[in-house]
Length: 418
Image 1 (cartoon, rainbow, N blue to C red):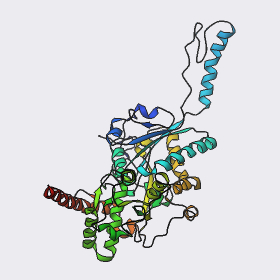
Image 2: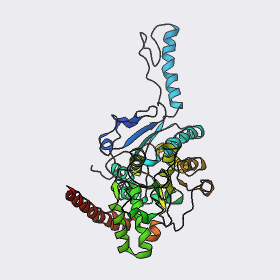
Image 3: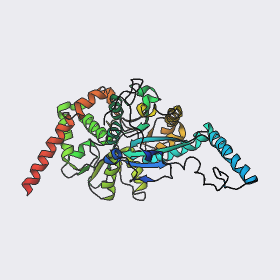
Image 4: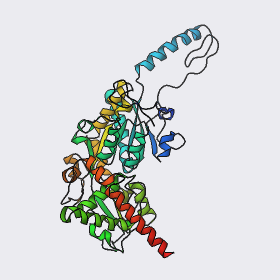
């Protein structure tokens, strides 16, 4: 999809919104209403909020009956002349709903479903502005590509800063996005965890056990899922900080040798492990492990190991300026208010209830999540995200080298078995 500069020349323009986004309905998952680019990326979309605007008026009889009136003469005719003006004044006094589209990564569905409803209620009570949401969930990398391809998201909440940086480099988000909200626009955090089978029959205790020949690993695909890129970096750091990059590459390769299947995102990886029973160890977000245990197996929670020497997973938010700026000013005001709301205690408690590590110390201290020794940040150990992208995740980066190597050896082994 081609884009062109807006009148200001600062951001790329975006196509006019698909008519489906203006339809307001009770919460529902869309399939037939998806615009072409959303369906192509396999996005899951949901609406929050009630119907918007007054219903259309009925057709009157004689006497030029107006909105909601019937025809006639005498007092009925006078009423029919008066009603349209009163109805117009009433409609003008009531603000029309602002509809925001939020594109987020897969495992935040529960949290943002609740938080968006809380915000809608409080914002209308305090400001008088009705708000409706369109919620889209998929792997973080998938969402980033969808926005760059024209998904009309007003807000993105993605799994790692790199995905927002990519959207910004396309001219859709202003370069100063990280400074526009508290905590460098990081709204929640997590770490990498290892989920194992009931009773931990293989006695998996940490990173090194993932290379064993008797352990089959499930992890999402790094090409589509933010969680998988965090996992890759965590595995890399486990070996690189002590034994160097050559040893790190060998270690990560051995882990990928043990990967049985790579679903599109963290939620699908959980389904493969919990519901389909595949694999001995699931690599995922800590929050996804906590949440899935509560929802899928509350009576028989699977053990979750949080290894030390772990990466500090930081999940940012941003306004998609190129999509928001052409709209009425109340859209940007509402989007900004919503992102500010995410840092307040009620929203942070909802994130914590879904297993995330809160950005607020007072919420985090009551979470019951374990402390992690040797917790490190990407910027602190590896430099800027641009460097990380080029070194690890570009088409010719280290991740692609490892994946090609592993794929070739697995293919050769399969052919040999035949």
